[in-house]
Image 1 (tube, one colour):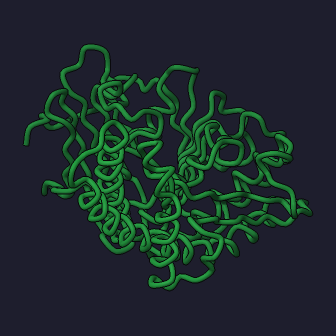
Image 2 (cartoon, rainbow, N blue to C red):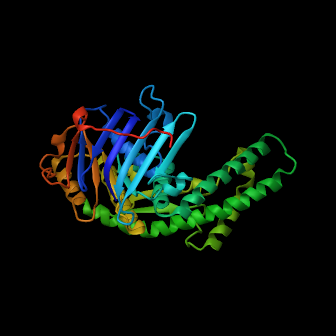
Image 3 (cartoon, one colour):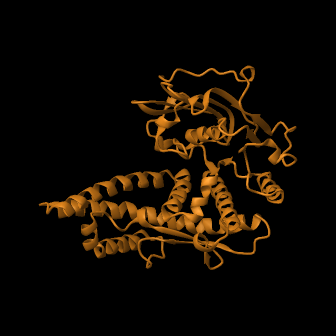
Length: 387
């Protein structure tokens, strides 16, 4: 997938901007606060229907703007021409259009433009809590499997309903609540078992990709691995019937504690993923450099997984990832990113000199984009938000 042109109107620091990209390596540079990260944020929004920095669309608006609008023109390997437009109006919400047609469910759009993001916040993947790692896995599988994403959405709704029943039961002894709880439990187990099975299948494939990606990152001798621990240690198969039985047994075992706490205490929303280097847990024992290398390997493995599963080369977004690397590490990582098959990369850096000598900007495939864009080089024609 290649992003050819990006237009931003009243999005963050961009009142009106139009940017043209090369099909390989693109460096977006400029002073801090000028809107470099906002460029990547807008691409992420067009691809995954949300920002990677905030969950509140209102905060994406330029100061006092009545709406924001984004337009991306893409060329895909299967869908040759793809125009994606997103518009947000306070009080009305956000809308997406693909080639002029409205997207009825935003979930249906996810995976159309596979995207991988590397950013400073990736440190929480290896150093943070299990929720960060669950989100990482959900992001990857959702971009490659619409059925998995549908199950995730249904599971969250079912979990919310079940938790509401448990909370009411905790507060008072409700007549008929047990029957209602049981119906939500049956649905939770059915959907949750499919999610666990999909995660187990994913882990079996991703483990090998992670090992190869880590080896590519230089003279590292530790062997990376990870352990996915679902609801029960007895689950070692992707067979749905076995998972369903184990999930049901785990919920029955937690019956008393759930009623005491008023929440669902077992399920895919509580699963743990632990990363290791050799036999040592990364979160507890890794150095800063090891955290950084492991995080980069995770994203390279994500790229390879999505390329294999979607038959579309992902766009890779890199936000200020080179600032804390020495010249040798930059040369190594850029060399990996320049390999055939890596597709389009869009990189941000405060200073263009940090990548000087590593990228040939004389090539038509590569572009250097310096912000702020000059008015004479920034023609912009955006549609009105209502269509």
